[in-house]
Image (cartoon, rainbow, N blue to C red; front, side):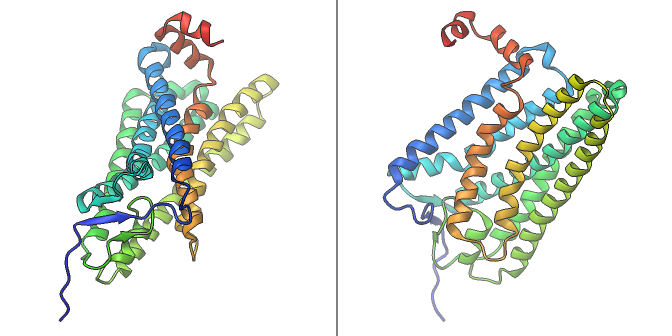
Length: 310
């Protein structure tokens, strides 16, 4: 019998076909990550500090900002470390944690987009009953449900992936620990983990996306019945921003997990977009252009800061 040494550390090989571009990628990704942190912290600051923003819509936007902060921070710090010339190694426990939080926050965010679409559906289709339907208790239940659902999803995938033995190569041909990159290194039969993983991710994404489409189809019908051109424009502007963010979030998932023969370079490029660009764009798409958010930030920070920035 051959002797096997159990893997206690993985080596992240980084983004495929980018040798020699480490400095450029480090500066680019560091800029994106800092913009993500700044934008989402500003949104949370505005929502917490202003009583005018203590509404269901901004409650869910605050949750989205927290998820974006966590989601980008799951992979970006380690990636920036090895792009700067530090160790490319990650412990087995660190790899488990990275995979768990990546799928936990990613799945929770997908559920949250669905809840936010429902919130917009109630606001536009039933405006007079909006505050009755979307009361504080119901909003709390919806938000808690997204957290619990994401946690169950992540525990299932993480346990299936790491109940297998890893006793061969420890080189991960990717820039973070994800299921498609980790499973090929397992010594045992990976068919069950692969089927459950791709089915789980694919089905949840498709179900959430379908529910979002249904909500926005109903919203579109309601908008078409608004007599005021200004009212139609305002409603359409809000919904178009949400749809843009949703496409940025679900597009990468569909490309990565539902293609039959995934390309390593394409997958890594799409994942970088999903992990860094989308969380950076969400504050711009949803809130920072909003007059109420701008007003809240002006009240938080000294007026001279905004005067000097003009």
